[in-house]
Each structure stands twice: as C-alpha cells, then as structure tokens.
Length: 494
Image 1: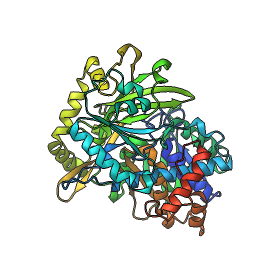
Image 2: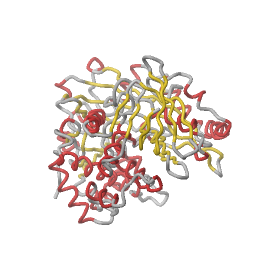
Image 3: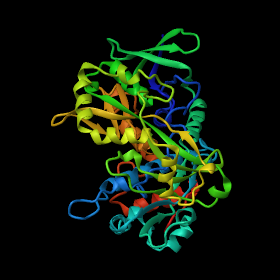
Image 4: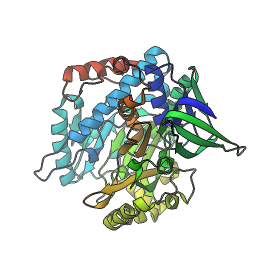
C-alpha cells in the first residue's frame, strides 16, 4: 500500500496535461500516473490515432449549423476557437519555461480550409464566411469561388476537376497541425523530471473503492508479473479513454448511473509519397454526408509527425465492440449495467440513421474508399495510398428525462459530489481541448483541499486569459495570439 495526493489513470494527453497543471499550481503534490500499456500516448492520443487538427473551428463545418431562418450560428465555433487559445497559452508558457525544448516537435503552421461543392453548399459557405470573418476571433479568413485561387491554395483539390463545377473554399493561415502523441511525450518527460511524480507503466487499475476516511483505494495489477498492489489517493482522475467508463462504473458513485458507451472505430487513407505531399499544404474539411455523425466529416490533411510530412484523408467509420484499440471485444458487453440498459435501448431505437451509416461504412470496398477521396482529389492514384487504422472513439450515452437515453458526440466531465474523483467521457474534439477541459477539472477541485489558496493567481500566470473571455475581449484575444504565435512558430495576422 502506497499513498499519494493524486492518482491519474491513463497516460494520454488528458492525464499528462492535468499532471503538469497540478505540479505548476502546487509543486508539493505527490502524483502517481498509472498506465496499462508500455508507454504514454499509445491509444487515442497517438499521433496517427487522431486527426491532429488543433480544432479551432476554422474549417469544421459541423460547428456552424444553418438555422431555420437562414442564418449561420457561429456560437459553438467561437467556443471551440478560444478553447484552442488556452492550449496555445499553456504550451507557450511551457516553451518559455524550458519545459518543452522544441515546439516544432509537436506543433507546426498549416492553413485550415473548408471546401464545398454545389450551389446549396456554396451559398452556405459564403454565409458562414460572412458571419465568421466579421468577428475578431476569425480575423483573416479568406473566401474564394475562383478555381485559380483555390488551385494556388490546394493544387491537388483542383487538378482534374470539371471547370464548370460550382465550388468554394475558405482559408485561414493561422491554423496548426498538432502531433498530440509527440506533445504527450513532451509533457511526460517534463513530469518525470519533477520530484513527487511517478509514472507506472504496464500496470492496470482493476478496482476502485471509497475508504472510510474519504480517500480512494486503487487496486493495481502488474501486467507482466500479475502481482497486485494498492494505492490510496485523495483525488483520482480517470482519463483512460475508452476504459474510463468501466472504471467510473467500478467507483460506484451515484453520478455514474445511466452512462453507457457506443464505440466507433475509424480508418484513414494515408499518403507518404513526397511528390504528392509537397503539393498539399492545408487541412481541408468538407461537408458531412446526410445522416452521418459529426466525427465523420471528411477532411484531407497535411500531417507533420516526427518531422515527416504525410497527407491523411478520412475518416471512414467502422464498428467494434472494443473500447480501446488494445481492448477486448467484450468491452461493450461488460459496460452494460441495470442503470444504463434503458438509455442503450432508447439510443438504439432512435438512431437508426447512425446504425445504417456505420453498416454502410463497414461494407465499403477499396474502390468506394477512393471514390470518396476523389471528391477532394480528383486525380488520386490508389497506388500511392494505404489504410491507417485510427483510434477507437467511445461516444457518450446517458439518461435524458424526455428521451430516456441520448447519444452525445462531445466530451463530458463526470465527478463525485465532493470532487474527489473526476472522469472524462466522450470523444471529439478531444485532444484539441485538453487544456480547456483540464482547467475545468481544476476549477472543480477546490473541495479536495489540494489546491493552494493562491491557485487562481498561479493559473493566471500560466493562462493570461484565465477568467476572461476572448470572445468578447478583442484586445486580449489579439494580444494572446500575437504573443503565442512566434513562441510556437505559428502565423499571426495583425
């Protein structure tokens, strides 16, 4: 039996981000991070397991719905946009401090674009651009319906396309590509250099039990030897991706009742041919197919991982009962509890369109995979591309008073009444909002007594905009972006 202040379960971007925040705010905290696999970032945080867009809602059309009155609602896009500014401030703080030596190891400038076809979609994109470019958060966003201009931005998208086809695109050069696997490794290396921090790999948390003194006892099994040990912690964070749900259920807290998970797998097409890669310098997002879930929005992305450039297209959805790539096919069945049976049934009955979509995706042939890519890249040669399996995503199913059960595609924090245990469920936008989510986790930790009295001032020394809104404070927004861009090597538009 060992005792720590904080136990972090899972070695992905979420736990490492939270670990760094906690040690910066209170260096005296003892923290142990427990990971089932051999190293950090081997599941959803792995660079090839996620899109690495650095989601800032510049190009993701699903964040800007068309309202019944014909206007484009940009409120969600604004929220996501400034959440990424929190990440930029946090990472810049660590670079200035020397905790991260080389920002280009995980973040690089890549323009963010939206691309649409057909009169209806062109009309929507024009309205979207007008609404977004009028706000300071999206300053510098360009719009064009001119094939020659779009060809200068993304040659592969125009080559071989019918010149009579109605198309449009938006572009903003302040976007980024983020290798979240590399970032996680940077954060882990920094944490390992700090006293009072321990990372335990190849160790699995199998049970969680509340002790009489209010602390949590974690039962941990070594994956090599089978030996069991125990850790007592005042605070537990469950950031184990798809494994979080079963651990949350294991905790027995009332707040976990009714939650279930719906796993969705993903596949990319990947190209490493540098002759092709050199002609594409953007993340280009299109329109999602009717009836498809938000995380299925097709996009053709420049990726920069370990200094090497590739182009990624997808995602193509699939279905697996696993909650993790390295998980068990029994994960879904094991997660079923009396309290979540009705929500599961309700979602199954009311989401036939999603089920149909997933079945269609699973049955896609190789030719059909490339037919989808040709919408973006007409002259594609299948010989230059191969399939890359992405990470598992577990969407949230939870109780709803009106519908018994609903399916959500975002991320959700579930915590006990005394904030001694916090779990993170859900998927997109995931890694891109890790800093925003962990700030929210820390905001809820005050009842634990683990934060110093001046923790808010310390948070503001890390995140200059903490407690303010970059959506309404244009001067602060511009200041933050002007300061963080050169530190991270990103473009800035005055």
